[in-house]
Amino acid sequence: MKHQIRARYTDSTVTVYQAYAPEIGLPSARDGRFPGAWRRGRMTWVKPSFLWMMYRCGWGTKEAQEVVLAVEIERAGFEWALERACLSHYAPGPHADRHAWKRELRRASARVQWDPERDLHLRPLPHRSLQLGLSGEAARRYADEWTVSITDVTDLAHEIHRHVKDGDLDAARRLLPGERPYPAGDGLLNHLCPSGPGRPEAVARSAG
Image 1 (cartoon, rainbow, N blue to C red):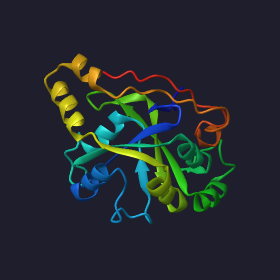
Image 2 (cartoon, rainbow, N blue to C red):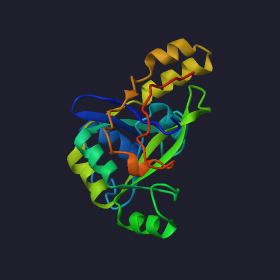
Image 3 (tube, rainbow, N blue to C red):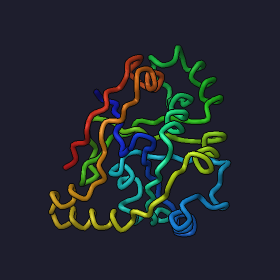
Image 4 (cartoon, helix red, strand yellow):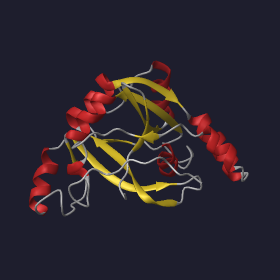
């Protein structure tokens, strides 16, 4: 299927990725929680896909995205957000018309965007990866209730990138976080599938 969700997860947690400037990223990783300077009133986007995060932050080289964080959150919170999310763009199928979509978007505290998954060269793949935007109550819960641990994975990002630049893709693959099909469950993603009702299939990453 075109729209897929994969993640690193345990029985109770799921890992998402974000990248921040050092003044936010470093204390977050040090203390295992987001600092007061982390603005809970704005929308924040989390990505279950490590390689999509690398595409977004340029392997941790883009300005204000130099610190890459792996944020382990409660699966219950992640699914709470998905259940209450709205597609960030109108698509026929989930909504009767644009007016219905706009009404739902105004009410939703979470948004979903499906972007092309990336390979190790950060080239787009045919299937799409979930990006989850959190605002309002969802952002506050993410920062203050759902977060279990925060780990600085910037060095890992740089090491994988070095292997890619050296042409050693096997070594790069061995270092990738293990992402596998996320057990979304019947109905959890139906309202977030742009092609209309039906659960997007979750398949394992094929990175190269």
